[in-house]
Image: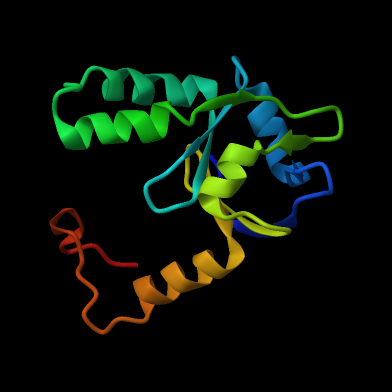
Length: 147
């Protein structure tokens, strides 16, 4: 289970050092890792074992439907198999860095079975948008939910 947020830096070779507390969980998953784009202009980092059912479901959708084919092109088209090196670093390709507008500073945010990687400014904007609205709409599935 991947939880928490961390401010990280890309090195000069576009490598991202994954925090030590998450390395073991990522490395014990069989099949490596998958890094891909998300419609919100962030990146998603999945253990391959968790990614495979998502990709299968996406590819089972009709390629004639514009929304489905758009998601297929984005999520599967940008998907890259990646590995942590011996120092626990992950290489982020130029295509994915450009897509998510990643620069030196990156937010790594745990989302249960995967991580999101965000441009720091974009992270703050979307976070403010999510919590700064008095009109926050709670999904029907969470009616009656309490923290």
